[in-house]
Image (tube, rainbow, N blue to C red; front, side, top):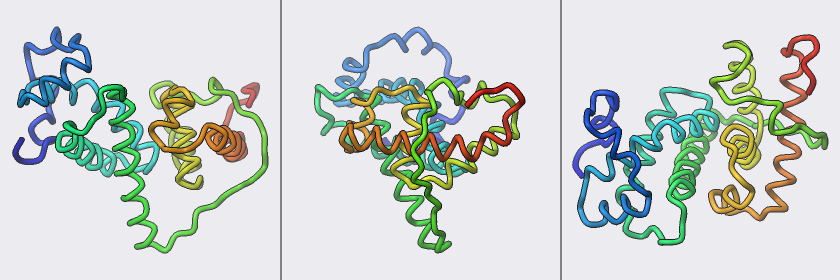
Length: 210
């Protein structure tokens, strides 16, 4: 596939005649891509581009950067799909690539800015239902506050929190994406919830329990 993939697919809504084809299984699409079928990769792109952008945005806090890094994610996916193991879930593999791309960008930004991330080691509880995905946030201000709070978490906790709370991934899926053990995931999530709760609570309305 030539050129920059995002440029070829930017206007997904204008690609007619493919909605019904999205029912293709991931295994079938992967096999078709491996056989040189670029249309199959476009279907994979259509299916996963929005959640990948959302995940990277939660990791970086920058929409334009998230779109750029999502482009790089799919470039790497196309180049590496021959090495994808048959037993690996496609979405898990893509999120793993996106995680690596985002972490590389964050490390580069930290080197440039010499920024020190903040951490808080208090241990409190925050259930998965107490923070909502972007589309259901109370308002734009709270959306901004949440992403500013996410930026203060270290990269490990940010990734785990985002995958579990915003993307509703299981611990097993998160372990596959991040390479972390499940005990570490639970500890990082516990502490990330505490920090997010501490930072967001002042912005929540009266009667909203955290």
